[in-house]
Amino acid sequence: MKTDFSLSDFDFTLPDELIAQHPAAERSASRLLDGRGGAIADRRFTDLPDLLEPGDLLVFNDTQVVKARLFGQKASGGKLELLIERVLSPLLDAGHEVAAHMKVSKKPLPGAVLQMDGGFTATLLGRWPEDHGPLYRFKLSSDPYALMAEFGHVPLPPYITHTDSSDDEQRYQTVFARHPGAVAAPTAALHFDEAMLAKLEARGIARASVTLHVGAGTFQPVKTENIADHVMHFERFEVPEATQAAIAACKLRGGRVVAVGTTTVRALESSAKFGPACDDTNIFITPGFDFQVVDVLLTNFHLPKSTLMMLVSAFSGHGHIMALYRHAIEQRYRFFSYGDAMLLQRTAAST
Image 1 (cartoon, one colour):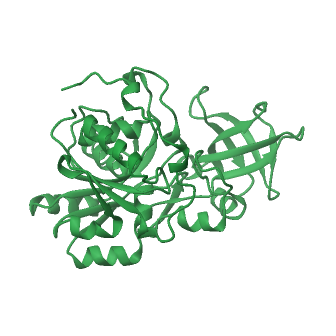
Image 2 (spheres, one colour; image 1 turned 180 degrees about the vertical axis):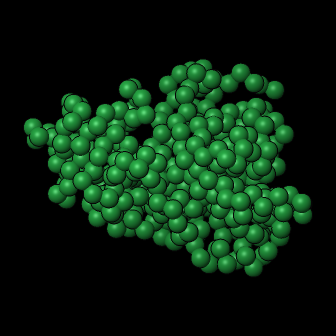
């Protein structure tokens, strides 16, 4: 059993044409690669209710993607872009403060007032939370959520090449999104529509939710060959008491906890590892991780050499995951956020 994995172990070659640029015509019209129990089977996403058992518990991430990409200019006229990572006002009671990534040719100095498209301003206060790192603290001239809703753009992932459209506003969002705060969608949940949820309920499959606000760090590349040297980003999350109770009841009746997406895995396993009071996680799940909650994982296909490739390898075994990805490429599955899905079962150890 291999235990000393390096970054190159999670690499693969993906043809550009397999990167889905647009969603399927209907949410549940995607393909589903069934990789449970070491098998490889081509299915449709509409098969999912038959692949689960009455008494199982589906756990979703109910975060809502905000239109976090804002454009503007410096006093000199230089163009810039802000990607709001999180709204700080409720946390610091600071009034309209946000932490954001800033894309600009030359960084302005603290105190600079930026004129943003839409007529509002963003005043640069400094770095956040430390004096180094990728995030900056800004004070906006009005409520951040209202400004994003009116003037923001959908923060599509960097591998989607078109500008955001009204279709993206609808489809880069789950049908059960409730709590605004994410800058990336929990993409495995994008496949679910109301008809699919009704079929699952009719089959006796229970449903619960967590909230994890997906940050831009989910796309941060791993730059160290020794994966243990990689520093994970923090994301806010909550596992409600009702969900904790639903998980306990599921385990008691012999059902399986089915996590919809890696963000749900991160929330559930963080709560189990650090306690339910934990509300900010940078958990790094790599082969050898001891899963305590999740039995089955529904997930999309992930970027080469990414932390999410490491997570799914920890869950179902590195060799099996790489075989599944080779099959998916050969069979022309659609990859990444708007792509197809995969169903995995937890193995005792990563091999």
